[in-house]
Image (cartoon, rainbow, N blue to C red; front, side, top):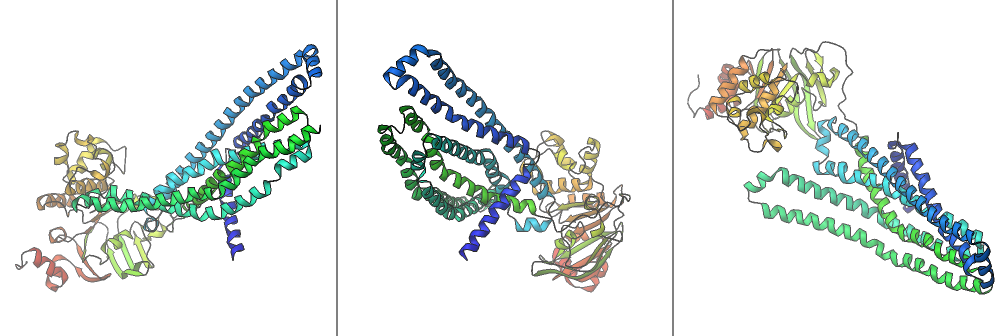
Length: 598
């Protein structure tokens, strides 16, 4: 069982690295060049100790030979010193350009992945948004992607640096004296096992840390977007305490993850600090017996850090790799997500939509909870249809099947005699205007919000549809009129004002089907009457589907459907439903103060 778990972790890690390599497409040659430069400049770290060895052996050790060399070969010393300085400047030049290459590749890859993921998110169906929290999606697009970028820009470069340093130093050590090289590298197996043990414990901790970060972001996002509700109930302290709990959980997980390395750090540090001792004891012994020259001893001493530094960097490298692994899995999950609602290919037909809608034996459920059961209804093109029913009766779910926000589990939905699954989604949704009770306005001008469906719409058309939605009057009183920035989600506007702008936005695309989901619930009766008159005299053909609880909004409809427990309980005109004295009649009586309705 333990071996299987380790194999699965290794497979997941290799999967993350394969995904990363695939996303380096277009940058691979440049990235490989950066890796080559990294190997080169780390190999050049040997130049200074090598030159130092020559200077010591030729000009500083051995009084007679040193004096003779200074007298007869002073130019050698100058060349050696010039070489040390020259190689140092050259290495600095290469380091700079290598770092710039890694940064350029990582930022370019990050830019491309983020654009692709955002496109993926926007093209998902509504079921996707039911499964993923907004805060979690934001974490994947920000913190998780930054961990991926950091892997490309820093972790890989650091690993290459450590390997290049260690290998080049090892080769040079063996060249000078194999036994001395073996003495210095004898502690390497211990480092390997310590690192392996650390990795096994660090992996699940980084997974947990990433989930805590997601919870923290979700809590912040919910409270910022729902700040009015928090203030309305005076629950600031309660939400602050809840956020503090999540922040403490994240902080504790972060500390626990960071402190884990401290359990293993003493062993690594002991090994690193043991290297000078080994050099002093073994190297000193070899020096006294003539096996090593003073210059070779100096070279060993000068290159000892090339073995010690990789040891000390192991903790950071493992931590960053585990962070990348946890983040990459979340990003890969998002990258691999496919919408269950897929558009049909373009048929090349005309874009006109007449607006006939038909439901045939439609049943729909959210998971195991059925909200619609064998619905059969037909709406002719150009008709005005009202849908009523108690909360939870399935009204909104029914209309969401028309633009294919969801697909029914059973039955079929037709628009103009064509199954919605056979429509190209862009064409279908481009001819359906929707205005809902829960209005979302973008942080843009009023003009930009109304013309959202057609950014090239002339100002005169924007004003015309604002007038049709009874919004022109209050817009004209605003500081910048149609250029007024409404702020995030329309903050600063009343519920009725936002609903009217939303209605104007839906009308502005001249839809073949107009769906109004409780759109006039926040407007007064006089404004509602103005809107109804405008809807009755639109200058383009349009099928109107209205969800409402006000009898004043439904009484003039060509057909009225009453939903009860996901089924059509009543159907007919205003007069016919009053005569049946069912749900519709009871609602009408309540809204009319109990007086008889004609």
